[in-house]
Image (cartoon, rainbow, N blue to C red):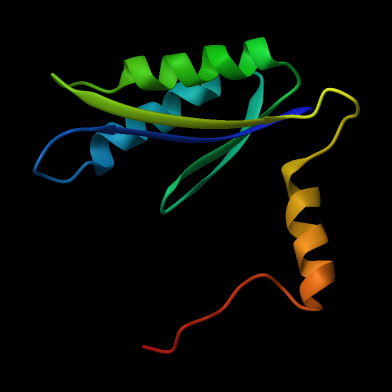
Length: 105
């Protein structure tokens, strides 16, 4: 993959956003992208910027509401192919451990 992005789409409402966020995530299935959802957004990987933008636009449009907030952060390496997992692996190499801290509640 050559384009990685963090996408956050949410309706501006008082109640739970889970149902609307699920619509945004489901919209990504119509595109040639891979993605992983986390508590703060969805990381998307695509071969081209055009495919990524089309998927992000569809996710935004999939959410119902009078007001929808969307944040898109793009990392587009144009000189080589790479995957999002490489970014995490490099950080873990520097840490000498996994990049995860588990809390004991």
